[in-house]
Amino acid sequence: MAFLCAYVEVGTIDGAARAAKVSQRSHYNWLKDPKYAESFAWSEDRAIQIMETEAKRRAVHGVEEPVVYQGRLQYEPLRDKYGREVKDANGNVVYTNKPLTIRRPSDNLLMFLLKGKRPLVYRDNASLELAGPGGAPLSVTVKFQKAKDGRPAG
Image 1: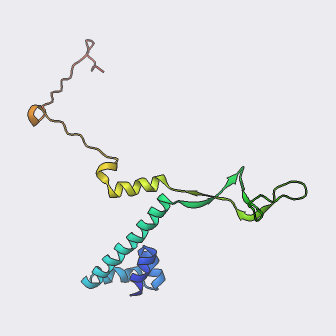
Image 2: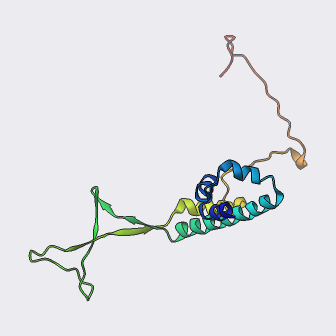
Image 3: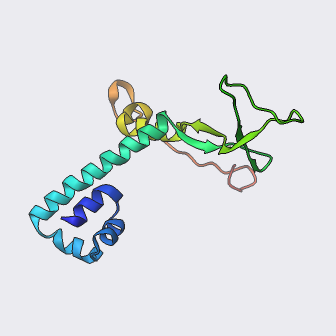
């Protein structure tokens, strides 16, 4: 089905509906059919696998970003067959029209991937459980006292 193929590629209901030229409502109606629902679950899993692969590539290998210095794009210098920069008659470096780039991996994306794969090791939330002696329930007593002038202490 065109919708499911599109969903694997784009990963969103809206995008798949537009690509398959059907309404989003059609998809939700089709979900009532158990066979379609099963096919959609497979398509969704495949779409997520594609996203995870891309996320890992960006996290580890990074993406090319243009180098900007003082608000201006920087360009690669023209090089001769020996790899040396080519200079004009005035001794200025000649540049190509290809922007200079730097590959930047994503530490944040890598951390999200680690949290997803190993939540017990990399999770942000931690819990603390207090117990009395021998694991017994902890007893807490709270006393409120008034200051000598009659106002609450604090």
